[in-house]
Length: 290
Ligand code: ADP
Ligand code: MG
Image (cartoon, rainbow, N blue to C red; front, side, top):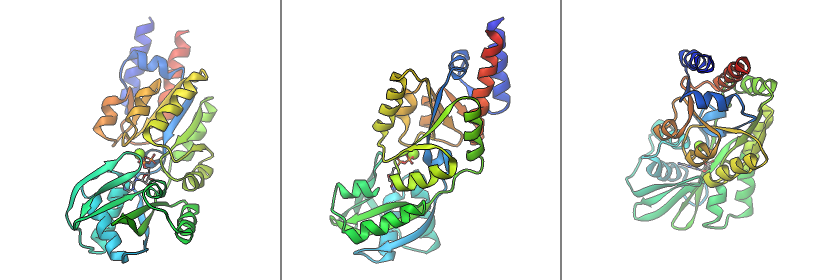
């Protein structure tokens, strides 16, 4: 009977680390037409490495120290990269007060009595104006596929930090498998457009960049309004609204508890290839029923 075939599909998935929260989820996955992927931590490994610390107003060491101070309590992949670099360089990490994440923009707080902000160039430019030579330096780093976070202190530019986050080794193959299954992949990211396009070009995927969490949710809804059935894959950091709006939200293994709670499905081993695997499995179960 139909429920038995679905139950068998669910347990076949579970044995391979493809967690679907019930038969309705499997049925919907079988009808997905579009998969929107988050970039950081989903299509990329989410383990960025600091490549450049650039002084602009404050010394390199201060830039690293102030950034690390802000990031100490953060679980964002960029925070982990900055804290690793500070530890490696033995840069002091002073205490930060009231440090808080600004979703999709960065993190802000008070260090040594001064207000400090670290975040995307776009968010930084909403707070101060950046001189053309610094904009050009940031754009050059972006063109190399690096993500840049800008540090502001005392209401002025202090410096910036560039990080590189490589695509997951199985991402290219995973996207090809989706396309072969007739499903269109799409990258949604809060990162800079130039950086996003450098990575998207390598992966052969369309990218929408410089998105805030609510923009990702809006794009999911726009695709649905075109009659598309959309799955959203993310690690949950800043992604909960889009995961919830999608027909199916898929959490990448190793993601946050928020993602696992909000999601309808999860790939537990953190392999991006498990996303097409789960969709192909669901499609074949549904084909055998009808
Ligand atoms: P993504 O969509 O790729 O997961 P996010 O929405 O998490 O990206 O972040 C968007 C951008 O905001 C980052 O590329 C970075 O420039 C900045 N940003 C966000 N959080 C942080 C943070 N904790 N530290 C530094 N920069 C951050
Ligand atoms: Mg993210």
